[in-house]
Every structure is written in C-alpha cells, then in structure tokens.
Length: 81
Image 1: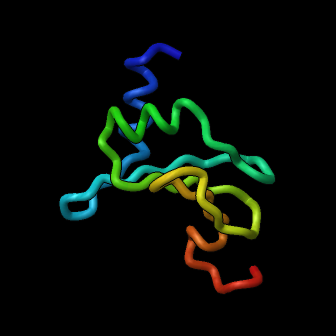
Image 2: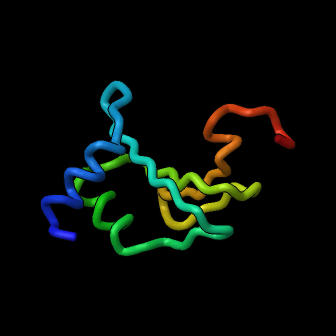
C-alpha cells in the first residue's frame, strides 16, 4: 500500500479527544502482535494511544501506549459477553 494511502487509512481511524489523538486498529486474530505499521502510525500521526481491537478476551500491552483490547470491552459490553 502506498504511504499516502496508509496515512489516509490511519487518519480515518484516529480520533481526537480534547488535545489528544488516539487510534484504533481492528484485527481478526486470537493474539494480535505489534506491527511496523502500528509504530509508524503512532509516530506519523503523533498518537497518544493506539488500541488494537480483537475478538479475544484478554487486554494486554503490545508496546508503550499500544494495547490489545477485547472487542466486548471496546464496545462497553459487560464482562463475560
């Protein structure tokens, strides 16, 4: 994917909270891993946090300010759903 297209893709998924930019990525994997594009997006878009939403049940850190988050938690569903 061309760098300009990748930038547009991440810009669509980044959102602004006050003075903080956060990003989201959706993965359909049991255990997402840190990727080069995540690091590049954090740097290029100056994101404060990146959440990688996945269909698992455990939240865990992938790197500083990059976390894998279960879909249910990201949607605000009660525990166990």
